[in-house]
Length: 188
View 1 (cartoon, rainbow, N blue to C red):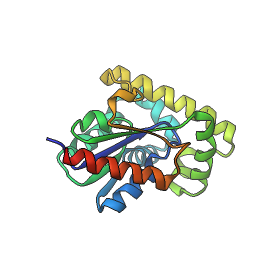
View 2 (view 1 turned 120 degrees about the vertical axis):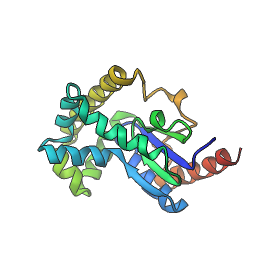
View 3 (view 1 turned 90 degrees about the vertical axis):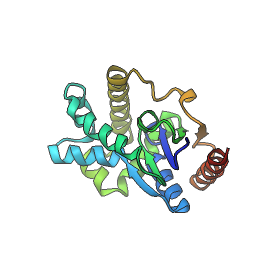
View 4 (view 1 turned 30 degrees about the vertical axis):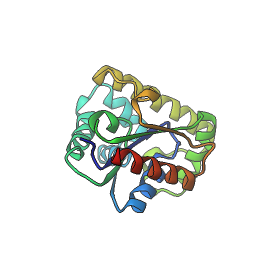
C-alpha cells in the first residue's frame, strides 16, 4: 500500500530542502530534513557537517540515529522528507530525485549558506571553491558509507518514481511537477 509520504533526494545544492518545505506547505503535510538533523548532531558533537560525515565512516552510531528517525517516519502519513536515504527506509513513499550538475550546485550552496544560520555554524565556508571541494568530500564520504552500510547507491535514478532537473526548472516549477505527479501516483 502506498504511503502519503514524499521522499526527496538529490545531489548537494539541488534544492532538496527548499523543495521539500514548499511541497509540504502546499499539501498541508509536515516536513522533516535529515540534513538539518545531521547538522544538529554535528553541532552537539562540536563538528562541522563534513567532520561529522567523516566521523560517521567509523562511528556507525551517527548514521544509526538518523536512520532510526527515518524508519520511524515510515509509520507516519502526510509528511515530506528530504534525505539521501529516505527512499530506502520508506519504500512505499513517492520517491523524488532532484538532479543538478555540481558546477551549478556550488553557487547555489553559497547562497543557501548566506541565508541559513544553522548551515553557517555547521559548514563554516566562505568561497565557492572551498564549498565545491567540501561538497565533493562530503558526497564521496556519504556514498562510501551508504554502500558500506546498506549496499545502496542513492544516486541511481531507477530508485525513484520521479527525476527532475532543477537546472531546467525553477523552484516553483519543481514543486508544481512534484505535486502533480504525486497526486497521480497516490490515486493509481
